[in-house]
Image (cartoon, rainbow, N blue to C red; front, side, top):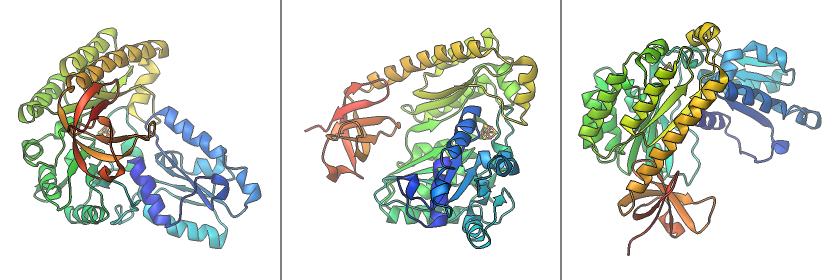
Length: 421
Ligand code: SF4
């Protein structure tokens, strides 16, 4: 979502990017507030640019995204060199903000939620990209106890199907082959009689589209229509990112995730019954306030039961104004214990990721080639339908194409293969 927002910021300004901050006329730090560490990192990175103003007094420095939304005016007070603060929903107002700063020599803050255009058609698009995001939803109506997203991104707003199709058609005309539909709870998307499954079918049929992905799904919003579309539309990839956050019913309840462990497992089974080879990845929060040893054991046993392909796992960190923050005042988990639990979880996950990669050896995988590997120029890289990275030898003419690759090696985080003769 943040990557997509960075593109929207670039698009709104319609300027060239420079790799060197010293050459910049505008420096905008786009931020994430999901965890305390990301939030602090964003703020400290801003400080690195303030000295550039002494050489270039015209330089405009701004902060955008969820940290901007969260701290608002405070940031202008704390950082006298900052010219503007811009919330994620206010990105379309950026050109006007810049123009006022330039003409009136003022400082600006826009953290409004109530602007009409929360989506813009035809976002910035860098030539040569094989894969692109299309935002179908802003904000979130769920209220997970640990999460700051509804506070900083507002309630759920679904983008009309017509606009989603228009943007996708535009991207396909620019050579994009893979679209990832993005939203905070992407599969809760709806518009009148249309539900997410209908959207998958409509976008999946667009000419030139090779692959369709979506993220992030909410377990309670999985429907038969969605699963049927995933099974029947050839372009929809065999992968779902389905955050569970904990394997313990007690913790899920405290987190206000609105489903139980069994509900989640039933959803996994429904998906696997329909698409037996589907890859399932997840998010896990370790050390949520109140998490006991036995709760953590249940998280480990859920991992054993599902055998996730991969997971993003983090130590819980309290976010301002959330229910989790209140719980942490009385029931926080010792940092050392959370750290130990996180390492145990991650070690187990590594085992399953490698196991899944080793199981692919000898199989022929369809790979959409994205470019040359950063580590070795002789190798191309791309993704399989299961969202695994595959490296293999080949020429630049294959970039943007789907090729069959036989898996030769299963590595901890990727596959290595060859194009069969
Ligand atoms: S579903 Fe929960 S975790 Fe996801 S964005 Fe909404 S409130 Fe946050």
